Every structure is written in C-alpha cells, then in structure tokens.
Picture 1 (cartoon, rainbow, N blue to C red):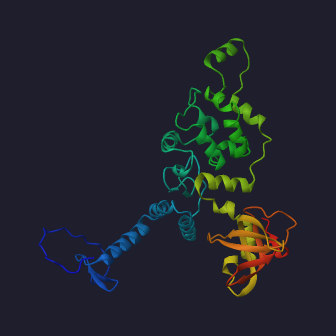
Picture 2 (tube, rainbow, N blue to C red; picture 1 turned 60 degrees about the vertical axis):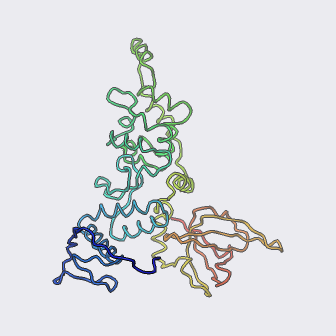
Picture 3 (cartoon, one colour; picture 1 turned 90 degrees about the horizontal axis):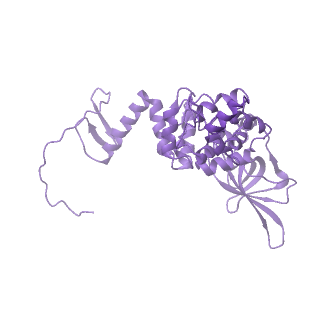
Amino acid sequence: MFDKIISVEECDEEEVYDIEVDHPNHVFFANDILVSNCFNKSHSLAYAIDSYYSAWLHTHYEKEWLATALQSASSNPKELAKTISEVKALGYKFSKHDINYSGMQWDFSEAAGAFVPPLGSVKGIGSAAVEEIMMNRPYRDLKGMLYNEECEWRHSKMNKTALIALCKIDALTSLEDFNLGRVNNHKQLLMTLTDDKNYETLRRGLYGLTSSQLKKKAKAGEQIEAFLDLTISNLSEVEDWSREEKIEMCQDLTQTVDSDLLFPPAVMEKIAEKNVPKLHDIPAGSEGIGWFCVTEVKVKKTKNDKIFYRIKTTDDEHRSTWLRAWGTPKNEIRLYTLWVAQVQHDANWGFSTSVYKMRELVG
C-alpha cells in the first residue's frame, strides 16, 4: 500500500448518474458514508448502487433476475443448491433438463411453468448441438425430433453422444410419445436410439433403408414399417433405471442431482409430518433422532476386529458429515437411500450409532 499521497492532479469532468433512490432527501447512508446521487466516495458506494440495481431488477424483472442468479451459481453445486432452495421459497417450481425448454443458460420456461437448467451444462452436449436443438424445436414427438418432412435425418450436431446424454438425464419427457404411452421410459429410448446398429440404421431415414432399398420394396408391393416404431415396440419390456442409477448418471453428466430425485417428496413429507430433525442439527454433547441421506459407505474394523461402518451423509441443505454405525446390518446400506437413526453426537468424535438403531425410510 502507498504510505502517503504524493500529489493530486485535476482531471477532466466525469458524468455522474442519478441512482433514483425514492427518498425525500434523495440521500442515504451506506456503511456510515453519506451517499447521494452525485457523490462517489468509497467502495461502499459500489455496494450501495449494486444493491439498489439488484432490488430494482428483482422487483421489475424477477424471473430474469432469478435466472441470472441461478446461472451465476451454476459452477458451484453447493451454492446452486442454496440458490434453488431460495428461489423455491419464493413459490417457483423447477423442471428437469428438457429438450423443448432448456437452452444455453438457466431460464424460466412459461411453457413448463418452471425454471429449467441449461442443456449447455450437460456433459456430451456441446454448444453447437444446443444451438441446433433450439433452432429446430419445438419437438412434438420422436419422429419430428429425428426426421424432417422428407423423412430424412434432421440433425448434424446432435449426435449419438448427445442423444445418450439426453436419455440418461430424462430430458425427453415433453415428447408426446411418453404422454401417449408409446415410450415407457428413457432406458427403453436409449436402447432404441443408440444400441447395436440402431443409430446408424435410424440415420438412413424413417424406415431405416436407403433410397434404393425403399424403391425396391415399394416396387415389390411390400409393406414398409417405420424402423423407429418397430424398434420401440420390440423394446417395450425394458425396465427403467433404478433411482440409484439415475442419481449417479445425473451426477456424472451435470455435476448436480435433481433434489426431488435425491430427496423424494413423498419421503420428505413423512419426515416433516413426524417433525424429525436432520442429523446435522443434533447438538454436540447430546443424543437424538435424525434423518440423513447416504452418499458413501466404508466398512471398517477396529484393532479387535470389531466391525463398524463409516457412512458419509448429506441433507437437503447439502451439509455433509460422517456417521459411525457399529455392527453388521441385516441388509446392505445402499447409496442415496434415506435413513432415520438414534445417534449420539460427541463433540470430539462426531456422530455414532448402532446399525440396529437405524431404519431405512421408504416413500
């Protein structure tokens, strides 16, 4: 830092801006520094102006402002989770990634009636693919998504990798094929679009044939069935991914997890009804009952070969802590399952319990 001012030189005049604070004196204080519409004194003034602009934008362009806040927090999963929670507290809903609603950045979709996360944040879907998707949508159904009016393959940027990512994060739910029951789940759709030689066959056209093959069959009077419809029908018995698989895929592709997937509303309602506190909120030096979600499990042994489990837990505020559970459980403690347990919270050793004092919550 400088020790003293050596000299002061006069500069040209600079335009100042009226920040339009609605106050009879048109003057207010920021951190004990007098601030008016033509007074620039310190770093505190910048905060004051920013606060005013933020409040004005939040008041007059709330959805756009909140979308900007979500986007600015998107690189930090914990900060994003906190921001989503705050936006939900204002009464807004959130949607999953969706091919018809998601864009490059966080946005509020009037069609979905919710804030939607960006496709640009999904691993495997590049910006060129997102631009192509946005240019060609809305997509009513699979046929319209994949083919143009001439039944030719529509996309060049939305490739196999992008289709795999879209299926794994359940981003095609808005297509009417799901609403009408033609497609049962995204795992079935993934296999339809990308398994074996399906992708290359589908790229040939709606019927999976070259133009010469089509002409030959038409000349012979053969009935031609769309390859897409045939493949969907053949895979109708495919079961959807498990909740654990969906969470892991979502975490891998987006670095975040949909809160409703990690904390199912039906389970959270039961927790709220019983007024069960979160594990993290049990005070040190006390014993109590708390709930948690399992994110990591390690089997350990003491020097005397006594088995215990070291369980990493989280809650819907994304607070993590470790829990020691003594004994061997009857059933496996699976990742991302929700539990309630009677625990002791030692100020030095942290949280501990017995596997016999743990109960898995079922939605």
